[in-house]
Image (cartoon, rainbow, N blue to C red; front, side, top):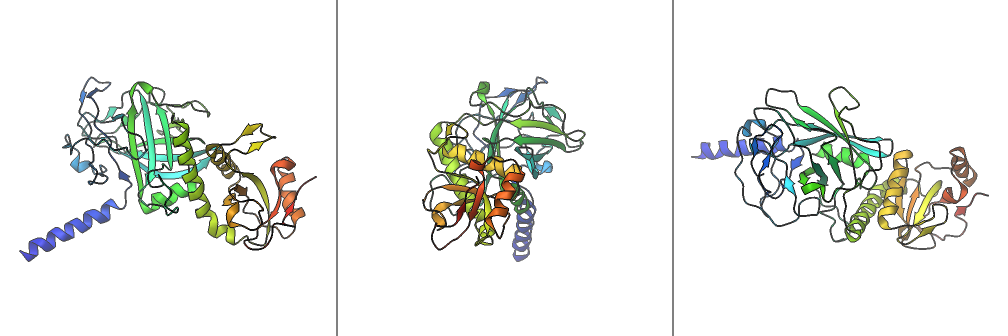
Length: 376
């Protein structure tokens, strides 16, 4: 009896250790039956209950046939919205996308996914709009901010009719899908995604948007079926259509999460002069860009600057005495200078207009006077 219990415990430990090497896959609510492009009936997706946690569908040896549903759930999925149809294959298994790499690509966060086999035979995913969201299983401590645990790291819609997706069979090579999340669909920088990949703490939620409802528009280049490298599919994720309140909640979480992550590096810059690229709070009007900024706009501008200048950091003016006013989200470079003239020279060398880049000395304690040097 003891030997049996010990063997069972060791087997469970091995499964846990193996599962940690993969990103988790959260399955979403059941939808109507679907018919594939080849005419085969697709069965409803398995779902998770409130207390069942994420289901890892990355092991093809357990994917030879339909899965047993544990029942639909009415709770929102990882992307923070309910409804939609889970994308499932002909054998009843949900689409299995595993993030493997993240990097900056122009003004987008590029994430590479492995498309894992889940059925004996390969098949094409029917055309439609895929709502793809990544969250973290690690809950960030943001002072009890509502919605912090559910806020997506990235969330966007991919038009599968423009970027057909093939799910390999057990005997086929693993498929590859590359998605560029443009600002508005990305709420973290590529380094954060890379960290989550190494930890194995990403949760992937993907579902079909019924009739394309909820699909946003995309500002980047048109997606294509050919990727940057042979055999890789490349798509551009558009920002999903969400209401303004939800977008602001997501943006506030993203701003506070990023400022907390950048805090250690900013402390190393204390006392130095740095180029400041932006300082805004909700409702700030910028004469240069001729727009009033929401929290979503502020984060989007921050991410665009971070992707263009990799050393960029985000801080809250409330935490730094060098700023006279509290509540502003400030974007600075991570390049320290001993003198303000050198920091302003960094701005001039990059052709940034004076109102959008000038020298600021970072001080945690002290007074704001004498810590700003504007450009003429």
